[in-house]
Image (cartoon, one colour):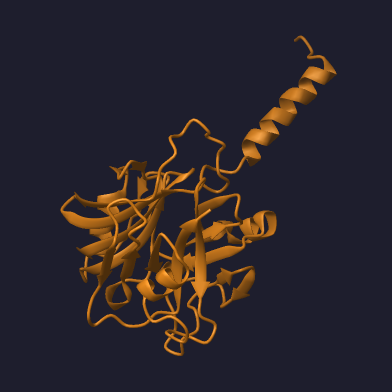
Length: 262
């Protein structure tokens, strides 16, 4: 048996190690500079019978941040439109779940300040994160690693996952159709903020998994708080925008996801 030169063997070993430990897509953004640059745009589409209101955007020219009300729901902002207009944002949507006492149900980081505790239920199955340079959606199992390696400025734990690596999520509920809010990404620069008019979690998962919607190939998708909490506002600055989707019986929420110009 022939023997490899020590330098060649070392190089192969290093390459294999890097491959094994490389972060999966959407945990750390790929430098896919050949992707077309999206301008923030509103879209109304129907997928698998579910009517969706979507805002597509690109993290190269837009930033998504968590607006958390430390004193509880409606302590500063009562609607997505009120915070969106005050911040001169492109769009705003209700974000994570919260407890009856108004505290966050799950970990939230806003402007680098953590609040809440890690939620181990399905409502905390994943999270959105960004540190200004890298953004993604990941499973809860990656939470400690992402926090230590990327030090997110904004993070929102929520769930359940609706799609992961283009694959369907098993066990999503087929009961209680209602309005839903969600977030999706192609695993790189292209993202969607979404509002579903009425769907079960299972129906919404099927409407998103493996789909190309509003010029975004969905790789990961995650559920936000829904039902009476669902609240989407789209600024006139967004192509086809100047929209509000919020029921009259909507209840105030603790936090929002705010889309701004970068």
